[in-house]
Length: 185
Ligand SMILES: [Mg+2]
Image (tube, rainbow, N blue to C red; front, side):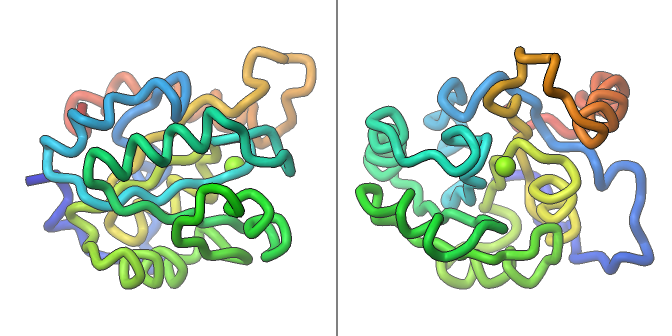
């Protein structure tokens, strides 16, 4: 059974430092051991799109198509959860054809609950994968889900790092201290 089945949804006024930490921090959505996650009991995976699966606004790629086919073969249900608009999400999802929610207003928890309703999963067996702490990870934690933060596409292009990314780097300095208690892989 996956962790966090006992986590409950929190409101904004009870935010804690740990709400900003993922369970895992990995190189890429394409280098995760998804079979291991399935063995741990996860059944639904919610993906951010922009800077997680492709560069911001980019079309789908054969690599992304292959990832979703792989996940379906393993037995996962998947859903795209994006703060971007319907045109962008539908364009990305055209060849993948999975569940999708646009204009999600992450980190608001409503869209995470709607995602799990569509997936037919619950907070204990659903995982969020995204590149942004203050939307993907914060929202997942507040909805009681486990999460994996991935390095945003373009991570190694340090020259373009904005303030939010610098804050994320500062938060992640503390990640090794809490990782042991949160790890799911
Ligand atoms: Mg993103």
